[in-house]
Length: 232
Image 1 (cartoon, helix red, strand yellow):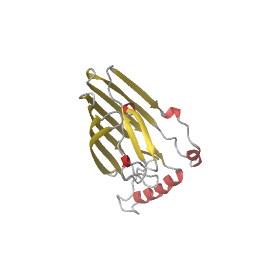
Image 2: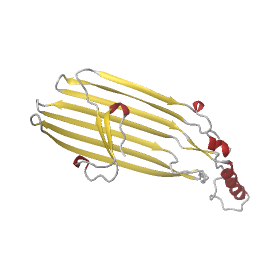
Image 3: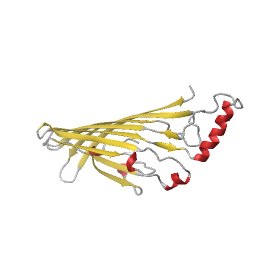
Image 4: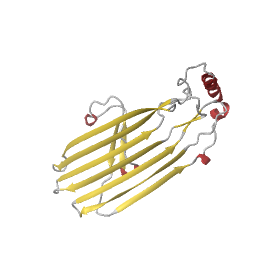
């Protein structure tokens, strides 16, 4: 699923049933988004959202299993800028957003002690080497980053004809995405998702009650899953 920067969205609509012909053969929900465009006035914006571990308390279930507080930390920031290239004729708009997240899952005492029994057996030679992580953690880190960029240009060719082009990119990196507390963190899988979306649209205003639009779109997504052994 392609993500867009917060600052680039002007409006969105979510439809879950009774789809129109514009949504095609949609089987589930359909999300329609409209991105911002530049104007004759140069304008921009920026934002910052930050959350630290010190602002998070230990939840009830973590206390019941005698687990450690999750060291959750997130910084989300970005901005946008838009304006004219040729006044009343050509405009631009661009936005960028970055998210940095440091989090993970604590291992409950019961599961940690069970894994420690296996680790002790491996240290004593009762289990072949390499089958158990001797340094299995009490907390499994699962950090991640997300970067999104959106660039858009509008051209007013005539009073009735206009052209729009937009390019959006996304890079999502996550560590230990499939790990759970039953695992000894011996081998974890990291994911790297890169996506691009390009759109070109021509609009023709045919009088007071008719509008003709021709749209071409290309999407590309690359997923890389990399398993890393913590025993070597």
